[in-house]
Structure formats: C-alpha cells, structure tokens
Length: 69
Image (tube, rainbow, N blue to C red; front, side, top):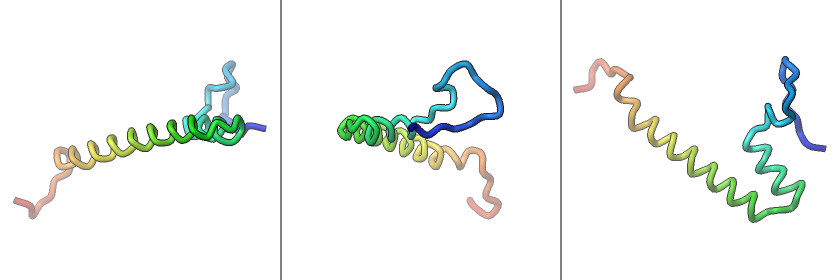
C-alpha cells in the first residue's frame, strides 16, 4: 500500500499529489532499489542546500537592520 495525500478536490491524475520524498520512499522501500533511492535523496539534499544558501546570502537585500552600518 502506497501512502497517499488526500486533497480537497478529486483529481484525474493519481500522481497529482505525489511528493518527491514519497517517490524516494517508494523506490527505496517498496521496490528495494536502495542505490537509486539513495542517489535521489542526495540530489534532493544538494538542491535543498543550494536553495538554502542562496536564500541566506540574498536575505540582506530584503531585510533592514536598523543599527547595522
């Protein structure tokens, strides 16, 4: 049984509410493709880390610190 996320609206596509983390879980533990699931998890971690670093570095453009020079 695969985990589902139920939304308020019924959609025609089964994968409309499919998250990438659920795809990693299914590949790793339902299909026992641990190497592929691990590679997907690493790619996801790198993307999240890159977006986090970009957000932190760009945050000084929209945040005003009153006492900072």
